[in-house]
Length: 272
Ligand SMILES: NC(=O)c1ccc[n+]([C@@H]2O[C@H](COP(=O)([O-])OP(=O)(O)OC[C@H]3O[C@@H](n4cnc5c(N)ncnc54)[C@H](O)[C@@H]3O)[C@@H](O)[C@H]2O)c1
Image (cartoon, rainbow, N blue to C red; front, top):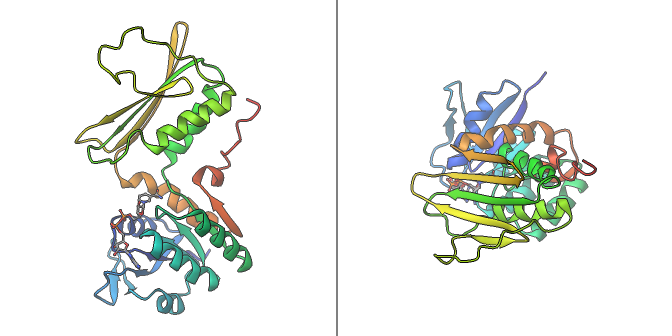
């Protein structure tokens, strides 16, 4: 079988380099070119040393020269939507991981991918672990009345709690159809010690130099607890999801949003 050919947009960035290396390791995929604003040379030596592929800052000319099956994008939001427009209009499938695409961007990507009969997969988080954790947490939420969330991130994270922790608590409440039971502390000796609260779920944020990103959900019931935990150790965690998306996108038409949708996990625990 012919390999799926891929052009990496943002090839010289942290994610772009990691994605290029991951594609090189997969015999079903082939990197045929790289695009990056920072490109100063005309060729990119692939990380496995197997060959040189064209490198340019001009996406349109490289699409014309390489005819890839898929464009993978990890850049910045403005560059991502512009690249998606260019690629989709040329009939090239797109996998977009860049953060910050707006609702309007997503509508446009959906419309363009359908009009040009190609696939588009957009996921703000390509790591499999958090998606599976959320799925399991939604199931457990139906069986336990008490739950707390602890999220742990590096010291430079700007916000607290994390968007993922908030979304997890909200989805857990939605899944059980009623708030969790929140044990009220009669006397809080230090204000804020019990964390924030979403419908009975206390959320605690740890910010520490040395951490990357972790989340733990602890469920409680008489005489037992159940803990679900995910730890991000390196950018490698995103690679299986991205590789899967590249292989899936060529089989689809229109937009798929989120890794959970691609894995058929969204809404799939109804009735459990
Ligand atoms: N979806 C996910 O799972 C996931 C995971 C990690 C990071 N991200 C997101 O991916 C994006 C990239 O992250 P990163 O850490 O690799 O950043 P980075 O800054 O290391 O890399 C971005 C690259 O894009 C290039 N670029 C910027 N504008 C461009 C343009 N107009 N045309 C061509 N190239 C352009 C830059 O030169 C740079 O090399 C961010 O938005 C980040 O939040 C998503």
